Image (cartoon, rainbow, N blue to C red; front, side):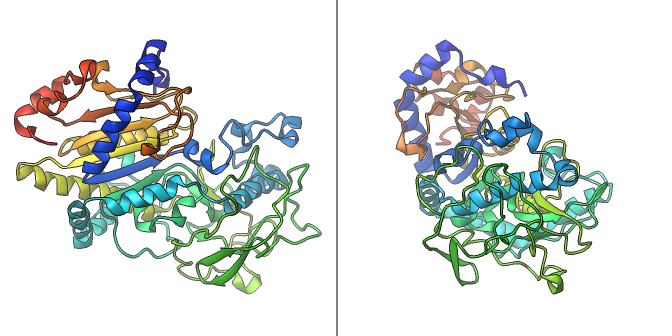
Length: 478
C-alpha cells in the first residue's frame, strides 16, 4: 500500500495548514455542486462518538496482563481456544456499540444526502430498478461457480469465488440513489440514519452472526442478534462465562416499544467497556431503527434461539457462533453477499448514468469524502482510490481525504501538484466537513478539464497529463 508515502512531510504539513480554509471552501463548493456523494469512513469517524480507536480498544489491565494487543485478541482462534476471552472481548464491543449514541456527524451526512440534486439519484435508482442489480448478482454467482467474469472492471470488487451464496439476514427494499456509505466500522451505527440499500460494511458488523465451527462453518447462513440481547462480561477480567450467575441482561437499557423501534430509558452503564469508551452524546436513542427485521426466524428457536445463553449458538448445528466480522487471520468470515452485490451494482449504475451525461456533453460531478481511515486496516482507502479511478472514466471526481496522519493518496499515480492539501493537528476543526477530530485534509480531482483546474490557486492549478489530454472533451465539466 505504501502508506508512508501518503504521510505529509513537514513541508506538506505546513502547506496543508496554511491552505486549510481555502481547501475546505473548495470541498464545500464541490459538495454543493455534486451529483453523487460517496462517503467512506473508518475507525477515526467513530472516535467522535466516544468509541475506542484500534490503539485503545485493548488497552485494559486484563489484556495487558495476558500481553495481548488488539491485533492479538481480534482473531477467531480464541473462539475455541478460550471462549470466555473471545465472548468477553466481542461481547463488550457489542454492548458498547449498542449503548453509545452516534455523534452528530451522522446527522450532518443525512442532511447532505437529503440536499443532493435530485436528477442523478432518480436516474441511478431507475438503472438499478431496471435489472442492473440482478445482473450483478448473476455475474457474481457465475464467478462463484468458478468461472471468469469481469464483475466491475476490477477483481477486487467481486465476492470470493468458490463459495455458495449467503442468505441475507434481512430483506432490503428499494434502491440507493446519488448517495452511498462505505465503511469498515463494525458498530452498525449507520443503520440509525441510513437505509440498508445505501450502506456497505466491508468488514461486517457485530449485529450479524454466523456459525463458528472449524475447519469450516456448517452453513452459509448469517442472522441478526435480538434487539434486547446483551452480553454479561466481568468488569475486571473482561471474560464472559457461558452460564453466569446473572443471565445476559435483556431490555435493561432500552425498552422495546415496537418492532424496530427503541426508546432510551434510564439504566446503569455497563461496567465493562472496550478501552477508553466514553459517551459524549449520551446513550443510543434509536439503535438500528432503519435496519429491517430478520427475514425469517432463525432455526433453533424451539430451543430458545441462538442467543439463549451468554455464548451464542449456531441455529443449524448448535455449535458456538461468532460475529460475522472479518478478523485478523480469518479465513472463515461469511460476508453478506447481497450487501456486496448492491455496492457493486450501485457503482455500475453511477458510471452508466455518468456515461450518458458525458455523451450529452456534460460530465457528472462525483465527490468522494473519506474520513478517519488510517494505516492499520487499509480496506477503505484502497476502495476509495479504486472507485475514484472507475468513476473518473466518465465523471469529474473529487476525493477529499480527512486523516491526521495519512491524508495523501496511496496508489493514484498523480504528480504532487495534483493534490490540494490542508489542515494540521493544531488547526481547529472545520464544520463544513462535519468532523470534529483534529483534521488533516488532502483533496485531488480526476477526470477534470484544464479550464476547471485553472481556477485553482498557485501550485494547485497545474493539471496532470490526464487532465490535459481530456481537456477538449471535458471542458466546462464544472
